[in-house]
Image 1 (cartoon, helix red, strand yellow):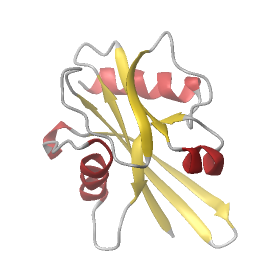
Image 2 (image 1 turned 90 degrees about the vertical axis):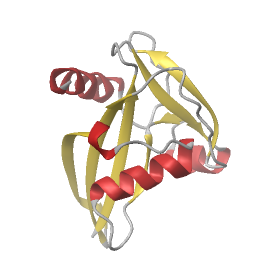
Image 3 (image 1 turned 135 degrees about the horizontal axis):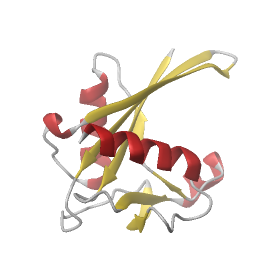
Image 4 (image 1 turned 30 degrees about the vertical axis):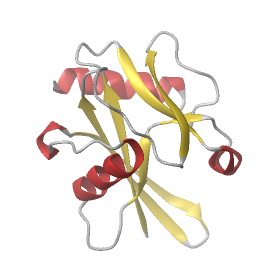
Length: 139
């Protein structure tokens, strides 16, 4: 079984979402340009610990775990012939002024208006908007 963590970052007034443009290798692998911060949860980590580690690794933020809100858990029983995937989706509200330092997994980051999301995202626009509504409700 594989466990994945995914994080959505929204501005404090919930008008924009932070997305990273993946490097060429990841764009080819996933067939998408833009996505949330996330990755595999390592053996011995909780979903929160894994998400916090991915946040540090991918955008250089040391986020307070109390800021993370669990929005959804998705299961992918047929992720591949050998893998049953489980994804934990968290969101947090941060300032657009936070200093973001991306690692080599991404080429750039950008704050997008929820009315002007990019094409070729890892998650569908419909899924992003659904998660935005859930995050706003939990705030």
